[in-house]
Image (tube, rainbow, N blue to C red; front, top):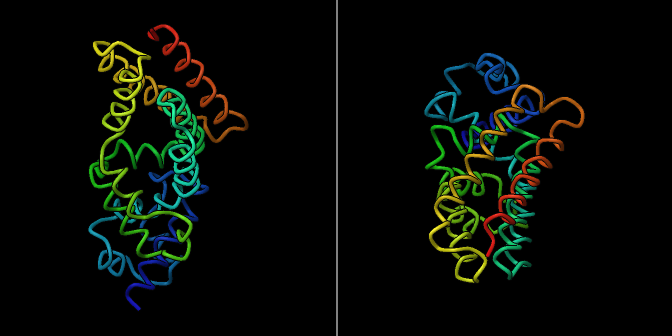
Length: 212
């Protein structure tokens, strides 16, 4: 029963996150939706932020599916780099506050563990995904993951090794900076796609400038 209540709290919070900012959701609202008390929520989660975090993981499902396709289908390191950023930007700009919490918030270093625990709680929903692979892949921060792909691109002869760290920093900083520029308007019609397309244009321009 405890596991069922924990799952219910996560799903109720996810439904609220689809229409509200994490900052606007109150623990009393979730308790009312789940027909329990605030004290019950704290029995299942370390704090309110952790509940928000678990609920936010559900927003990653389609992104992870697309990411798996990219990794399995793209053998060229540069094509993989661009495709991975495209998938990330597509979903991140649709849910900026959630993605900011997951990838830049205080739990970012535990994201892989959180994903794996979520996968175990909702195995039927993620039966088409590789939970272990996903959790391992997300154990590193964005900068580290992107840096590994950039290194492969340098090995393939696309970039100079001396440029890798700068290029990696520029890509990650550009992305998060633009994401924050759209934080107050991404829910407006067309703005999420606008932000994602704008980033991809900047990324392609940067790649062409540094490409050997």
